[in-house]
Each structure stands twice: as structure tokens, then as C-alpha cells.
Image 1: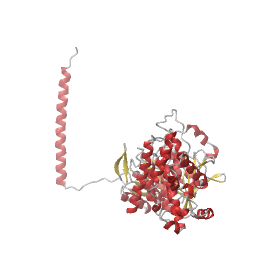
Image 2 (image 1 turned 45 degrees about the vertical axis):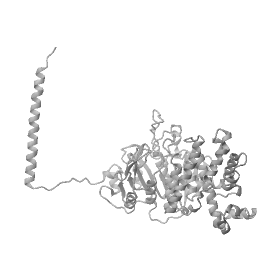
Image 3 (image 1 turned 90 degrees about the horizontal axis):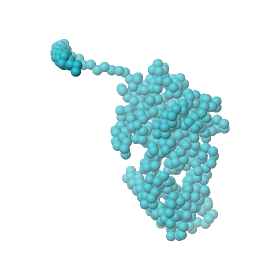
Image 4 (image 1 turned 180 degrees about the horizontal axis):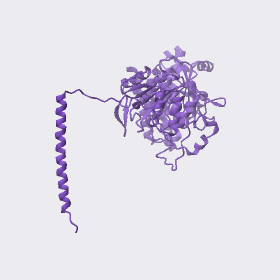
Length: 546
């Protein structure tokens, strides 16, 4: 634990150093700052992971004072054989790609160009491993040039030197025995300034790790699952998918995702690399899931074993809304598509796009599939419209496994109260567990916003209650599908809790005393009322017309 904390602190210090370098170059809070920091961080990470792996393959490298010097003794053929044995999900680096090589070359002219060329060459040579696909089939490579973000050409070499000097001393190598929880902390710190809700039209809300863990652990339970597919149609930076993969086992699942934001797709790629899931990078798609879903089996949409999603709740999409309303999409969007508002306000979108994502998720689940989806709590009780139709299908098909109503402000970036739907297409004949966790958590200040944080005990309380199907007074209740139908398909736990009237036994003498007290008070109030009436009458008689 002490080693873990040490490496977390060292990694945070490294990220801060990179931010400071960008700030000194006039790129602080610049739109391109995150691209530079993420790319240099990733280059450093891949360099050190490569070093870790080749040392495991050759004891001479592991025992050498400087492995870079020892590996220079390899012939080209020996080096090629070594690369062949490196994990296929890791970057395959040439000797000129090492950070140490750049560090030793930093006094050469046009050093910034050397750094750029090195990154591009790594990206090209590892394109099959790390490229992200677009909906049209094009590939977005791992790295792009960095120095061109510095407008003053004369400053580019110094900027590039500063970046390499920042990463040369510290090594990630001893960290590769760690699991997801460790890298989640690093990832959250790395992206914290670049994942705010002011990210333009497609706001990228980061799902809190506690919520992601609750969703994953309830979905997977204690099952030993293997060779399964996991999907998020609005993946963002991938925190939900990472938690799900961690609960299943990174080597037991394949990740699929799609997101319209290139920034999110870039961050998700980084998250997969950090979490030993690089084998799934080929399944990341940058594109519009609703309009052009990329993942298919032949001509049909691909279906998945597990789906997790925290889709955008409201987003106006008039430019392609009517394109979704086709005969081919009748079953996918069975409940309908939100209407275009008469007036579009970019600051206050009105179209409930999450309803389209929710229908897409139901369509994309295998007949044995399970899903966990974040929705606004208002969805649970809406009296009509698309919301009601979706709830009816979940109950009529007996697919709803349960619902958890989360505390308010569990997402610091939105004031909307949220709940999580748990869907299981094999839940027929069982009761539905409704949990009201809205009173849990501690409110803290995060920037300008209030945020509710769940303690470890509260998080485990929710998970265990759900897994064990426990009924707890004013917290959780099991209800039948028939009872939900009779309650107008309401998914709100509070509507099913018993209403209890508290009463206290008293003696006849105590009752008599209380009644006399009430009568006395009432008589006093009546006397005051009469006095007030007399005063009003007097004041009215004094009024004269002038």
C-alpha cells in the first residue's frame, strides 16, 4: 500500500510538471494543452511498459545497470525476435524510439522535429494495435505532432527538451503489477481539468468511480464469466467500461464502444492502455451511435452480453432526428423519438436524447444480456410519452431487475437527480428490487458545485442489498411485475413503501388534561378573534369620504 501511494504521488507530480511546462509556454488552459500532456504521458507509459516487458523476457536486461546500453548489443535479427515475444497489446518500440535516446539527442538541431517524428513513427508502426476507428472506417492514429502547438518556431526546441527532461528520471516500471483501482486514480487526476461539463455541445460527464463500481459489481455479481462482450454506446472516457472489465477480469472480456467525441475516444484509448485492455482498442469507434452504429454482425447490429451507459440526458439533434425515424429503425426506437422543439436554445437543450440511447441499449442486448443504465430520476414516474412506453416494455417483457435511486448531486457537474436501471433479459418470473439510496452520502464542495460522496460502507450497503435481494424499511423493497403494472408502471421505491402512522399510548387522565389544554387555548384564540373584529369595525366607522 505504501508503494502504491508513493507511485500515485509521483505520477501526480509528473502530470503537474507537464502542466507547468505547458503553462510556461503560454498553453495553460489552452484547448491543445490536454493533447500535449496526454500524449507525452502515454509515450512515457508505453516506453516504461516496454522496458518492463523486455526485462522479463531477458534476465541480462533485467540485471543490467542500464538496460538501454545492454540492448544495443543485440543484432538486428535478435532485436526482431525479442519484439516478436513482446505482448501483442504493448507498443513495439525500435531502439531510436526510447526516451533515453531522445534525452541523449536533445542538443541536436531541430530537436522538436525529432520528437514529433519519433511519436509519429511509433504511431505508424503500431497502428494495428492502437488506432481508433471512425464510423466511416478511417483510423485515428495514436500520436500526432506536438511542437506545432507552439506558435513561435524559435521556442519549439526548448519546449520539446523540457517535456523530455520531465519524464526521463521517473519510471512506471514497478507499477505494472497493480490493478485497475490504482490506474483509475491516475486516470482521473490526468483528465480532471479536461473533462468538465463545459465541453461544448457534447458534454462529457465523468461517471463517479463509486457509481461505476456499484453498477459493475451488481451486474456481474459473483458469477465467473468468461469470453464475454461489454458495450457502451456513449462511452465518454470509459470509466463505466473499466469498472465492468475489472469486475469480470480484463482477460475474460472484450470491450466495444462508440462516442461522437474525438476527445472522449482519445481518452478512452488511454484508459484501455492503462488498464491492460489494449486488445479492445480496435473496437473503439468515434462516431454517432444513434445515426450510424458501427458494431455489426453482417447487416444486423451486434448484440452484447453486458451493456453499461451514462448517456447524455438532453441534447437537441434536429439535424438528424428525422433520419432516425425510418422503417429500418422501427423496432430499435419502438417507443418513439423526441420531437424537435419549436425554438432551439444551445444553453438549454430540450430533446431527451437519453431515451433514444436507452431504446438502442435494449435492442443491442443479447437474449441473455444484462445492462445498467443511468437515467434522470424523473424517468421513473413519467405519466406518459416515450418514458412510459419504455417502462411498459421493461415490465411487460419482465426485463427489469431493479432500480437504485441515487443521492442528489452524486454528479458534481449536473443538478439532475439520477437513478440506475438494472436490466436482465432472463429475469422473468422474479420480483423487482427497488432501492431508495437518496438519503445516503455526505455533501462536499467541489469547485463551485456541491457533490455527494458515498462512503465505502454506504457503497457496500447498496451492492449487498441488491445482490442479496434484501428488504429494508424505507430503503429497499421487492415488488412483483403485476404490482408495478397496478401502480401505473412506476419504478419509484417510495411509492411501494408502507405508510406508517406513529402513535403513543396515554392514560385517560393524560388525555383529559390534553383536551382541557386544547380547549383553553382555543377559547383564548376565539377571544382574540372577537377583539380583532371589534377593532376592525371601529376603524371602518372612522373612514370618511373627502
